[in-house]
Length: 259
Image: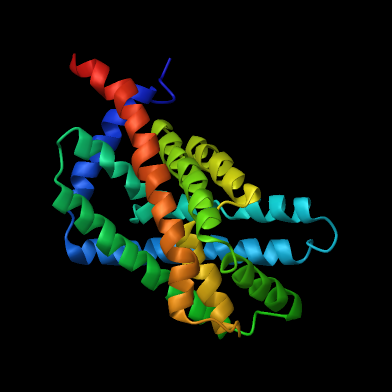
């Protein structure tokens, strides 16, 4: 019988091999693939807005679930197109622990991919704001979302960022274990749906949500966007997806194989 998925130890090894490739990509490729990933996640974020805004007044829980059900398409597009996503690339720290890449290579990837993700998200947010697709319900939901995300305390956004990226990198991890497209779709969908419906904070999606609200009229500065949300969420995302998950699975699967 053909094997349908990789064992966790095999996924850990494949994550390290992938990190070696990612650490050696050119700046141009990192930026271009990062921009595309930002756009892909933005597509999922806008779909979330469209679905959620129509049901929020009827049942908030159902609205969040249905919105969360379409959001994972963004990560599916990222993975299926080979685009570069900062939060998924947080798993590259496994290769640092295994001494397969350098800190310089890691930070080069993270910096240019994060920059690309931001550029792509902003481009999509600005473009959609000019399409006249936004009716009053969508506008109200967009503005309320942007306001809510920039009104949280540093602690709340940081902790939500940790919880979020644990699930995001587990979605990437599960996708790597799958051996066909349909299996990968399901492997991605469940963890990503779970973090969205739970209300955790995702830095790349917020690069779309909050600037989109700003373009649609929310009174907020770019400095406020970074200080009140993107910085603490990004730090939380790194801790959850770049430290907690990689350390646990490196100790569980890579270290024993080296003894």
